[in-house]
Image 1 (cartoon, rainbow, N blue to C red):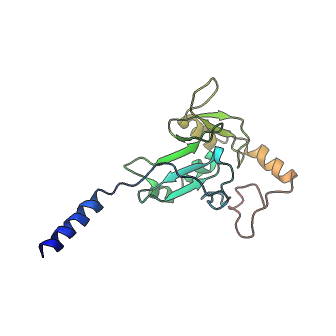
Image 2: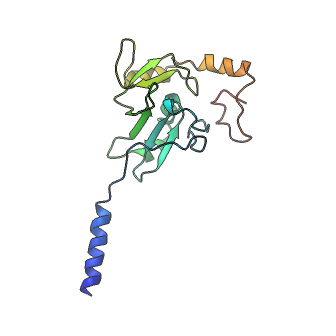
Image 3: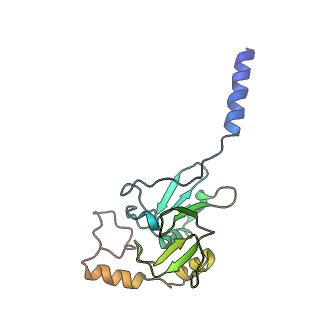
Amino acid sequence: MKNILFLIAIVFVVSCNNKVDTTPRKPNYDRDVCVTCLMGIAEKNYAVQAINPRGKVIWFDDIGCFVEYLDDPNWEKFIVDGKPVVWIADADTGEWLDIYKSYYRYGDRTPMGYGYGALKEKKEGYFDYKTTVERIKAGKTKRDEFKKMKKEEGGMKCAPGKCGKGKCGGK
């Protein structure tokens, strides 16, 4: 009987101290899908990943898709200790960076055409996270240029029934 109580106590203590791993994950290219536009993650250097309290990862193929998702009611599921754990790839090196501490260069050709690439080091003309989010929400992106280019190329080739509600600029 003492052994059973001891075993139950150990299981309880271990389960209470189980901390979720919030370190960046390696994407499964073309298998992991952006939760906003439903496109496969194909370019690591612009990918974003958020990790929820259970350790589940959601992916975004562009910081613009991440910013759109911030207003989605499902975003609240991805809060850890009051602050979401979110990583973004460095646009030049692919190294995972804390999205909130990164700097953003405008003018990149990104997967969904928002035009912002994350970088570790601040340089002249780069924006901080808060300013970048404000700019994206205000429409200061390369999306119109991106959609025009995709239309001239014949549109994006989304799988039947898989297009992210027209957000990709495709058909």
